[in-house]
Length: 409
Image (cartoon, rainbow, N blue to C red; front, side, top):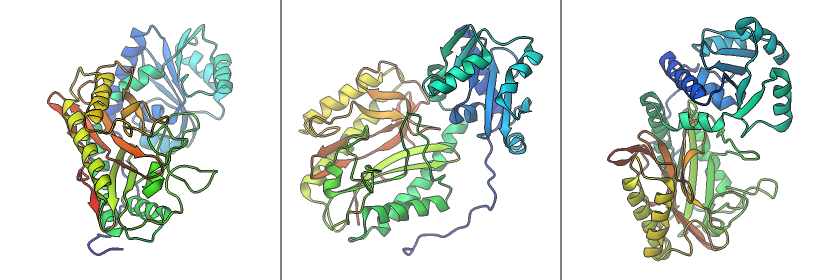
């Protein structure tokens, strides 16, 4: 390990808990939303949504009525669920088939109008819960939940700041550790190991079907100009055709651009950040593109105020990139461009809102987003930057603590 990198110990047992007041506020807002949607209850099965409203990610099902206390039906592990969650109604069950009986006993009947997470619920599971709970009307509660999650509380901002500090130290380690001759995979693995020791969960949570979340996205030289399966400006080579994205076996060479896009998560809260690296020096063409990306980054963050739409910020980005002379390479090579320049972030790596074409939802104070202006030169290199910021009345305020600069090692 390079000199100057501290080797402190972490607590032997995890001590993180979501405060009861956070859970109470979230459930109260959910119940208000259910009333507004004329739903009698929501039945939540997706892990992140359940964690948001209960404080535990144990194997369970959350029944949240529009009125009255929420019930958490836990299959395993009940003692840990009770230790982790402040909910008063934590009910052990051996089988999910017992839930209708328990609901009838508690409420007298099953809800007629029920919300389910239809964006992530597999068809077979949907059919099972539809038949099990037998509501007259089922609606998708996911947009409502994601809207509630999009504005972060002061406590959540503090969690994101803790993740940001862990990420800052990881990028500083990367800066000291990078050397020519190591493979992209080796470099990513060393960064991930450093971050894991400091609380990184090791897995990034993503909501989409078939989506994978992995921390170390290292694209050196021509791999930075390699599109692929990811909905991102560049995909990289990956380790094989079975996992064709991210860091691969290519060795990093001196004087070439290296895009490092690193996802961090601590206590459930994610950061998504990217910086450019080079060993010994950056070629002027690539350095100019890096400077353009940073200029675009700074302008958009300053413009991210409440009331501005994601679509408006996206169009600003496209216009400014063209004015800088990078229209062709902005957000991917011709024919492979993505349609967004930023996304919300929190308990999942990608959340609403989106800084994207057609997304007319206005930003609100205390939304948190990852902004990622990138230029891709097909088969040659990528140049870009990504930071996480909070929306304030004065414009975006960086939560990222990694210096917004090119790291020349």
